[in-house]
Length: 233
Image (cartoon, rainbow, N blue to C red):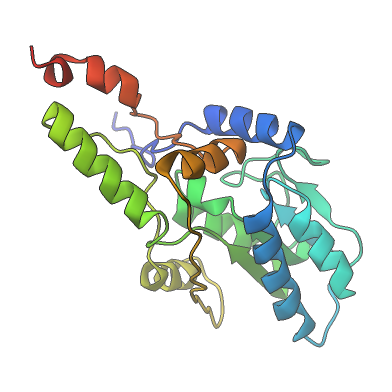
């Protein structure tokens, strides 16, 4: 009897949910979500139609749902978020095919273990001629942090473990949307720079947003430095 292996478990989803819930309960910094939601609102305002049934899929805050309502294109959304009305996994949402005319997702799809599968599920839930709008961290996100952590750990321990989540490239994203069955898929990039006085300021914001490392096979930097490689043993 043969078994079919599922997608690799890159992210610890249970840890992610705990961190996001804790971050939202403490009033996490929302500058990224505000920027993403403003962009969503601008895009929706260019669409000259209404969406009677809309879903916010996985967005960890209410910014995207509020933007959709503010656009006047849809009534209040069914929320499928970590602190929303319906608790659902983006990889296996509990909705029938063709349930929604509009699906939005804000800054959550970068943490799914099966992105092709999640996109296929979103396409399945859309009605014919439905619209899917999503925003996620892309390939160049936190590239400086990734390089700095890798270099520092290699110099101290002689090796390096993943410290920053992998992010999908925009060209790959376009292909994944097409593979999922979306008609006329478009993937684009909005790049902007945030400057911090120190590494610790950036890490403080990432932790406050619940966006610190949630890789399944991670070892803490502290533990890495205590390992035989790091101690020089």
